[in-house]
Length: 320
Image 1 (cartoon, rainbow, N blue to C red):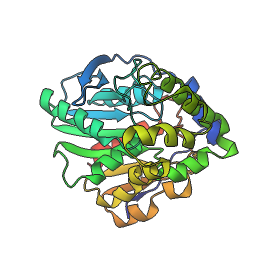
Image 2: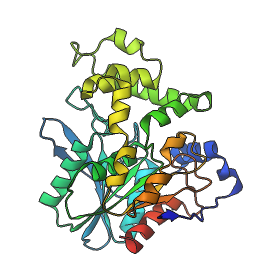
Image 3: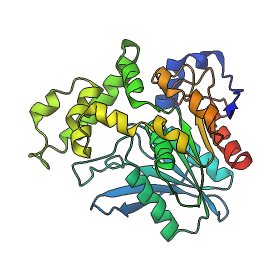
């Protein structure tokens, strides 16, 4: 059973899950990272923006970094990961999902927790245009679910993909949604809802036949957003259909390359079903670390190199 014991033990104040979550999302700063943007045109006429950063010497290894809900390539949990991988000899490609790179995307659809076709397009692009022979995928929150789904849902993946790492992963989307809708998470959920609906309003003049101001006014919760927009824009029957089909939990038994999941016990975004103990026990390729602390993507360390960032490098170098 690849259950990894955790030695993560932060300072007292960071043992509070809400404090570590908020500090890491709103206060943390990562300096000294230089990123170069590349635009990837997608087969359906849309685009993704890729933010590249590089190791000091030419590298055969690259990590693809996938952000969380309403994140982007400059969030500290992405830039911190990119910087640490660069310092350890790996290039980094931070993906901005559709509509997340600072510019509204062209299509009515955007991104969601299971849109692995866009990740596949990034991987194919790297294999076609770069000289990396080793590809690693590190996904945070929503991006972690997407990464694990990608490597588990396919019978075959490119042989260059050597491993995957998921941090604070809502492996069961409905379980995570139920937690987010609880009073303890009201401020987080409301922040997400506002950001999502603000973006959706930008599509009103572009797609008046698909969405109306009346539709947007009906969005009171994150589930409403998924019922009214996510499911309809991406071909699902409703929010529950989307959660069922896109949760990575069902795909974990099929993963055939080394995969590490780090989910904190005090992550208020994750319900019980988001901790894949059974799947890790039954799949020798799936490693699960469940620290007592860490909140949601809040694995603070005084060096400003977070626990999940050092663990990712260790996993890549020792297990893969």
